[in-house]
Amino acid sequence: MSFVSYFPGRGTVRETAYLEGKAEGEAKGEAKGEAKARVSMILRALEMRGLHVPEGTRERITSCTDPHTLSLWFDQSLTATSVEDVLAGPPSPSTDTSGAS
Image (cartoon, rainbow, N blue to C red):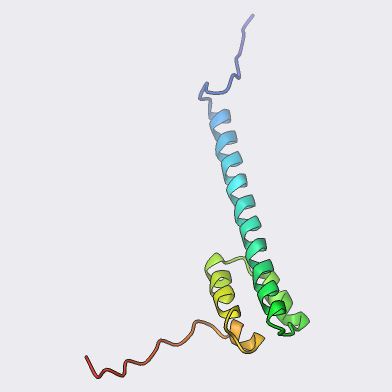
């Protein structure tokens, strides 16, 4: 009779794959939660500033999962004069008026 131990830390291929899958799933879950929080912050900022968000634009914001884009949109939602300004893309760089090259 053979006794097989599946005690954690044994280092089997199956256990290693399980732990890697678990870590990947947790990371994906955290990323989704963070994206959802950023979307909420964008929509809340626009609402607090009195800017109406059309349904199509709301769908575009809520379907975005890219953290960089969501951060950019949030930053722009704080100063934009319209919802279209938020989604227009990165602000253009300021022009150097000092004349230095």
